[in-house]
Length: 388
Image 1 (spheres, rainbow, N blue to C red):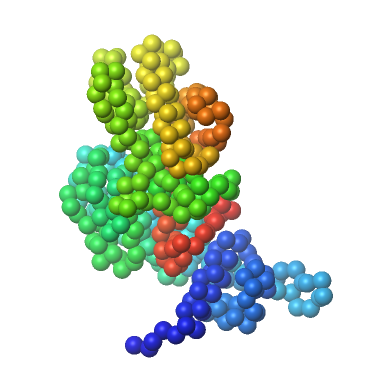
Image 2: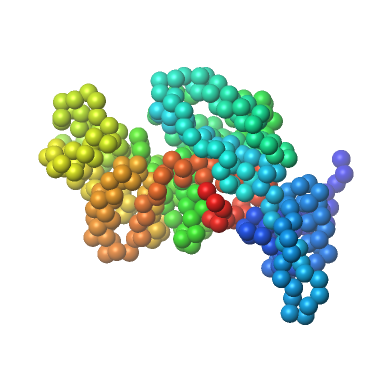
């Protein structure tokens, strides 16, 4: 084995910085990169030649000449169709998936019902979708990597240690997929991926510290501190749905047993004496001023507002993003939550409702696996300008 010299290490570091600049620009030039990074032009040109040979970058016409005149620089950009990534969100009822080119532009996005299917059946569906995509999507290198969104806890060794909604039956999805497709596979918590989406895809997310709270079947949060995803010691950071609160009877229960979307629906099924009730029907009853639904929503607003306030205090962030299909469909409930949070904290918390939170999770997954395949883990990438 050839020993790695300090020169090799420096070149690798410079390559990553150059690639980061190219990814974060709609298009750029070697001269612009040289100026931005403070590296000499010959270093940039050498790295660019390597990237071009690998087909990671492409030329897209001429830029403007300098004030001194001379030859116009060549515009360069990331070669989007160098390859593609695939992301899967394994939720309780549906398998949401997204296929993206290397620049994160969407090739396909949809969902498949997996309700009451075993994890072996779900894996077969995932593999069938990957196999189909390998046959239909044209690119230089094909499939580059896969990210799986898990509604549970993923530890530092990429093992699923807690999954309240899907039984993974000790199946090692990561190893099975890596062995079959010979590409990197990353598992990550769904709420963490939502936070990554906010950081990397939303141009308004300038705050280096933020919390993204997801309210679906359960409640979780993703935490960004100093632009980095904070996962905690065992991947359990952000499990705010398991925060204990005291009921009127003095019993301690997790807060998500009161104000997750499923807990509200299940509670109202009992109150309304019905076996079938969905989100749309709950919203319709709420807007019709049904007394039981109004009371349930008032409790939801109060508890979620307190949770948001506490999360903001725990992590010293003034910006909180909410991913909630319920509030997406009934924005008047979000308005009540925002007003309640304002009363608790005198308007010091900026609260934002995410549009299409299922897509947010998948875009976050796309970013995580793109960082991985480009060997840019820990480097800030900005996809906000990409057409989604």
